[in-house]
Image (tube, rainbow, N blue to C red):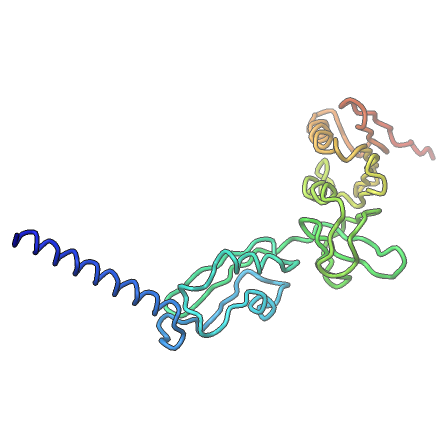
Length: 247
């Protein structure tokens, strides 16, 4: 009987101790006035164009929260709503700091407004991130349909954004100066040396870019010799040589 009573007493003490610890944890996490591991500083790193003030505001972090109670996943999603933010992460630095680590989108093209003297910067994912002053890319995107021409608007067809990513701004080790997507069944590129590349339907461009780059790696091929490269049909390239100017 004594042995059973002792076990019951131990169980009761374990239960009480566990309850006290849980209560203390709840008080620590959710009682702002305790000021134990409360958020006193928010540090933003990795941002160049998105301002720290805008990001902190978007995160909805505030004094009085504890470091433990900050919802990291929700905060990350809020930050990634900013047009410049490609990826974000949230780190707790004890005892009083939250660090927001930002990876910004890269500008991949620019596009001319059809009726106004405005150029907009198109970043990864097809997001508009700025106007004239933010453009640091030479690739012109022609004929793309947009949800609008303001900060945060996007390309209507994400396949165009994917194509820009696949190009990476280069074909055959030459910069692409112009990509015309006015007709998505007939995509055209113009390289820095003036060579036109006919890619055809946007649904086939990935395979055709692979074929084109394989062609460019062949020893006998010199892209500067050709005025036009047509790879729209069956993986076979039709090459139009440049006209020789005789003097």
